[in-house]
Length: 153
Image (cartoon, one colour):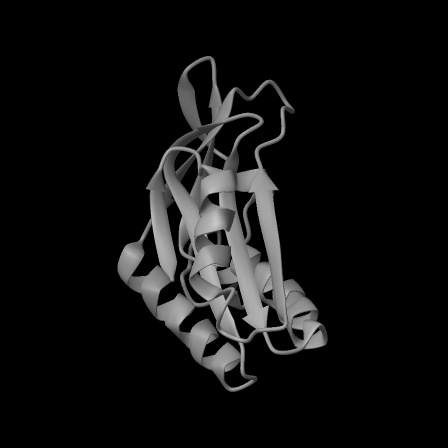
């Protein structure tokens, strides 16, 4: 269950959709996370580019990891502009036991921030500016790599 939205996510509709799809599947827990764009540094929105083939592969690996624990993963992310006070990211983990869902949610969100192929921009005065200071290098990509005496790391 990987969904890509153009613009902000309709969170009430999305959570109801996920709950409706799985509430009879005998999972004991649905744990979710919703990321909301904060008003800070003069931004009026965040804007996102997504490399879908790599995102799908990354998501599929997480889905398999969760299936091994008897759990199911759902995720939604925005592409394009997402105004402040609206949501760009949501995920839910369904699990027979709450502990698995809670533990895996934390691991998933941290890995998402570090490795999902999604690039973030600030929108300030209608201009899209790469948010390098709040971005994380993607493992193996060279994007944001810093030069070190021994070469790129």
